[in-house]
Image (cartoon, rainbow, N blue to C red; front, side, top):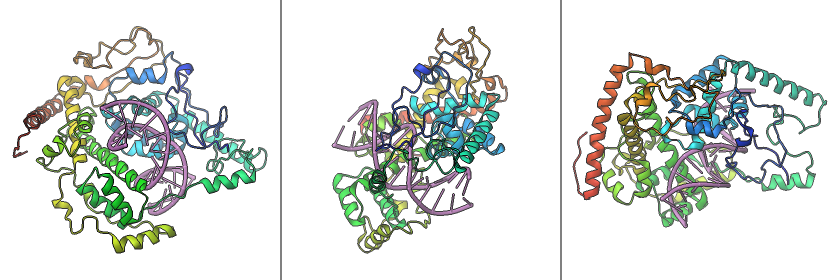
Length: 454
DNA sequence: TTTCAGTCAATAGA
DNA sequence: TCTATTGACTGAAA
């Protein structure tokens, strides 16, 4: 069974041998066959040549303002009438949904893993490429051309690029009807949760963001869902709530005084997420969390949802659920316990931001932090360590790799005098938050109960 | 084993 | 046709 549906990760022509060392995150049954591509027509945009692989670039990249980058990318794409799909597949090596997600909810840089930073570095490289639009337009044309060719029978189906129509269900032409049939059967229908089901899960989440196996099974049976669906829902919900909090932080910063600075993402986040994984909600942090005013209520309030129509299974399940469901009935979300996830998420970003901002004020005050890629060989300034923010004590990205001849990283915003005032304000805020965190940590260490006023 | 980050891809809605 | 949402999945970390 060979289905080539996956997108070929983009080569930026940085250093092909080092490219794509990350394993493909998905090993779907329809993983790309060796040498097989579904999108040959979508050649990646060429970036200035450099001996560096994208991962080296990511590792050496200074802190990027993810919010500003995505904002800019959105603008450019919109202004030039270029779609997320084209951009994602040819520039980032991601699908449209992922691109949409990234563009609308970028995480702050310091919250991203190396892998998570990669798309942002790619975006930045793309933004710095003076021919980026042209190249993407060319690609669009090529795609259209390929589509027309295939449509008018000049090419056999499946042999051409990721053009409209061919993109979905890009099944291997070698597939027999029997295989196709079994492929269709193997395809699981997507579960669509009804509004009531989601509402019930949300309520359950408020009660117990990390439900026990027993709770999961109970929920699953009451809602007539598979336990895996419930588990997945909780995972996804926690993860998305966390990101929501981060986004709010970023946007706060954006509107707060000066341009965005992802290094100071949120002012409502007291503890680190790294800790929070260790400090399970049922543990100490949860105890402390209940002492902290819940700042992230938005997502917990039941938004009006109209969905889940169609699918018979869903509607059956749905009506059954209505009849039997009452996981935590009569609960008032407003009175519900603090959501440890929101707390945890916000906590972490705060501490992280403190680490960055307080320890490196210049980084904190570089909202326009930009990495510019110079096509001009500049062995003298690889990743400029002499930049203003290099005075920041030991940020791991300020190292000086001697073998980075083609890149210079420019931080224009650091020269902006207007930033002083906002920096000061930001630092004051950070200091205040730092104080709060410090007290929280002490309280947590002593296991003592404190009443807080923020 | 559990949780997470990151992503895919189906689907809904504009 | 495009974008946003979201259930499911993988691999990594703890």
